[in-house]
Image (cartoon, rainbow, N blue to C red; front, side, top):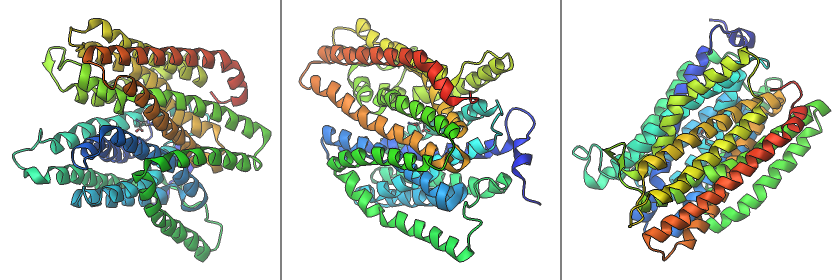
Length: 502
Ligand code: GLN
């Protein structure tokens, strides 16, 4: 069969290109593996590696910050050397190796496994998202809906993996068939099996991508191209020991975070000299989105940190009358809401676009912050529904996640979409990498914010803890509200920078 041309792919009929479904499944399994592992990290560090919870929190934050920071580097190498498809394959392979290492002996090889996973995710995550963008012509208004569907895949994987792996590890699932002392091995093993499925799905279906994601070095001599590619593989393996060292010493994380952000900005400025003034204005607009998203993720990512402690200490264990683990609910409610509502929100944008009343991306981002503020305000309100022991309503807490989910849907899938629209072709993966680098800073600041809230309540009783946490969330609600108002206020300016892009 002849290779599909980009035009043939982009001229698809209907709502979604068929390639989107293939990428949906690859990403779903990859996120299953990623969130499955992520959900186990802190529990494993405290329970099996015997870290105290403060150290574990910092270390956990470091792993997450590194994961997202390396997406920037992965994007850069994809744009310049490997192309998206080879990057994705290489990243997937490293993730498989990382999870197998963890499955074999998580206690002995914990940071080694994490090191492989960090570099692997760096090559995989930004590039699969960039490929999604490539399925659409620049002016195709079905793009946001496509990213929304893709995002549902992300969360389907996150939902199942996030629940399943930790449940196996804790002995709450398949306990009869898995020997007690192998539970963690099996749980990490699940992550590697699904990552293999993810990669196989991609390999089996990548032909349908035609010329999308092929090597950017087609025009140079074959031997030179191979040399660059092999060098990339070798370098990426060579830095793993360094990454292991940095992740296992969280003070290095600070240094790394001080360097990588300014470096990425300087790199972008350096690249900008190759583009026209109009293209550079769009890149400036992309930067505004990136900066605001840091704030968004810093609040949102309280989920894995302070909100987990809040759930453990201050929430009852029934949701709508059904007995459930409050931490489990905190981990998965948001993903479930995304799955239910992502397509609906995608359809709403499409419906509005047809009637020419779809809000601009800046306004959508602003709305995202307003929902975020609303959600944190709901978390604050839980303090008024507490019993004398400081235990409060899981129903109301879950409603908070429901509200925040709409904020996420106004910002996260759309953010990926707008990165692909605002970047010149040659810079798309780097910009996607910068988008995820913002998440790295979000994770980093989330840890600091969460630690502040937590340290204020160190020796407090449960009731005082509830009040301190609730007050913290009220503050975050106010800041989110301000950020939303500022974004909507500056939207005319940002729109100008974006020019014809919506
Ligand atoms: N939950 C989303 C994902 O895993 C977004 C993560 C992020 O950018 N912080 O893709």
